[in-house]
Each structure stands twice: as structure tokens, then as C-alpha cells.
Image (cartoon, rainbow, N blue to C red; front, side):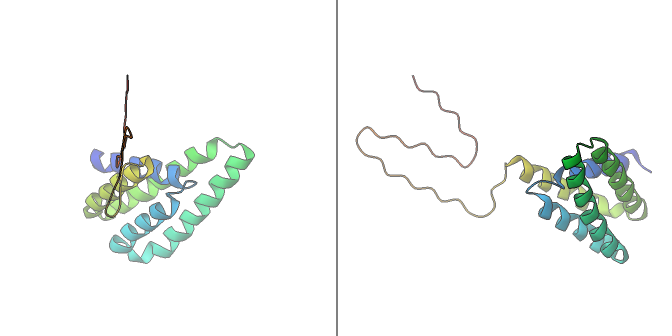
Length: 139
């Protein structure tokens, strides 16, 4: 398998497992299932069940203090993604795009939809608005 595809598979395994127990879980699940549905539709049900089982396993591991579970799940998902990419290398751009979106969403850097800001200030008032990070130093 091409080194680029192996790297992508490793990144996918890490990203999926890191999102299993976060608010981004549903978006990650839907994205992974979408890639499988497009490139390997016969395996969609199995992938959905495996994602759900992985999530339950990781939640249980967190409660019991099992630190190995995440590493084992990452290896499992790396293999699954590598198998998909071996059979369907044309899935790589879509998977890469998914990982970019998931990583951006989990870092809080994306804004979906329009942004409208309005401020009214009078006298000595100040207004600071940002649709992202804002750093203000007043002296």
C-alpha cells in the first residue's frame, strides 16, 4: 500500500477514536459511514455497528481506567480504513476532506452558516466583536 494512504489510514484511525467520546461523535460517525456508503456500501451496516461498539467500549474503558483501549481501537480503525483504501484508493480525497472537517470542527475553528454582529455603544462604551479568537490588550 502506498505510504500516503497508510498515513491517511493512521490519521483516520486516530481521529475517529479521539472523537468517539466527544461532542463531535455524531458528525464523525456520519462522515465515516458516508465514506463507506459511497465506496463500499455492502459494509455500511457493519461499520455502523463497529463504530457504536467502539464508542461503548471506549466509554467503558474510561470509567474503568483502561488506558490501552484507545490504542487498540485506533489500531482497529487504522486497519479498517487501510482495507477500504486498498480496495478503493479513490476514496482517499473524500476521506482526507472528512478528516480536515472533523479536525477543524473539534478545534472550534469553524463557523457554519452566516454571522451577523451588531453593537451599539454610547458615551465611553466599547464594543469588541469577533467570529474567532480575539486578543485585546488595553493600557
